[in-house]
Image 1 (tube, rainbow, N blue to C red):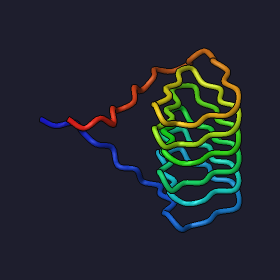
Image 2 (cartoon, rainbow, N blue to C red):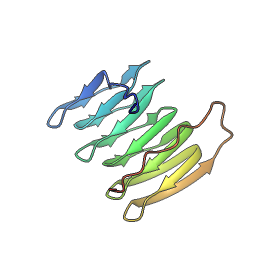
Image 3 (cartoon, one colour):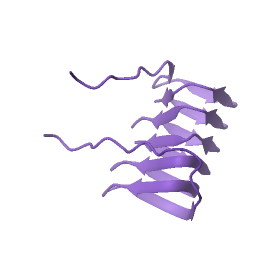
Image 4 (tube, rainbow, N blue to C red):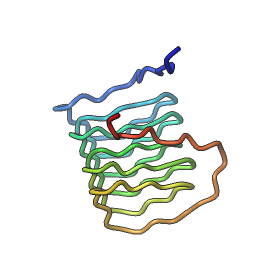
Length: 124
């Protein structure tokens, strides 16, 4: 059988602009623009068209887009090939793909939970 895919129930679509803070206990995907903070107890995916200015906090963060601000994760932060991050990253595990741009500081912290390994973006 194939892998079970967990649906992302919270979505900020491309073209949507939010000024303020987002807090959710579930997974969230942002493809739009957020000026403020986002805190989730689930997985956070910042899509290729995302633009976040502010603090990002989630156990597992997958960045495909742009972040200007601090990123905090007790699990893993993955900077995908075309991502652009400016700020401080505090995380237990960090993966930077070739082509990602990161300008800032990285602080490695102790993990309090199991780390979810990133899925590969390679085509088979």
